[in-house]
Length: 122
Image (cartoon, rainbow, N blue to C red; front, side, top):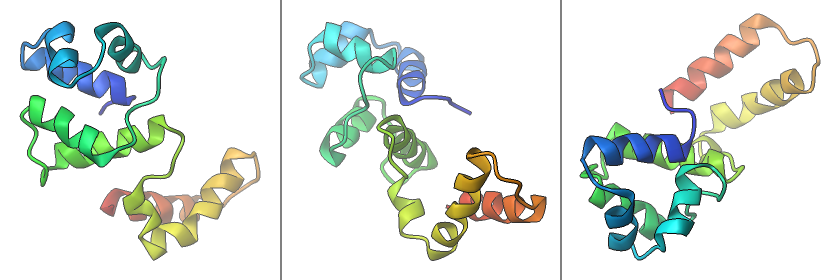
């Protein structure tokens, strides 16, 4: 499991044996600026076109779980709820439980388990 978008992309890039300079230049990024994305100092790209270009460079099929994970991490890295979660009525109905928990309110473990299962199916 990956923690951040930058961590995910860096590990995939290294597995493909692509240097940061070659990778960033192939995507049309300045290497120094792109390095900030991988280090978590700049937000992940927001455009679907940019994410698809990154996936292409990393040989990640667009219909794969790897691509869905990359998109989720990009959304989270920008401080957004992933689109797939926003379009799932069950997940959306359970998000208030998550937010109450994060704010320190006592929440029933069963409700958290239901939320986890709903998010896992995303």
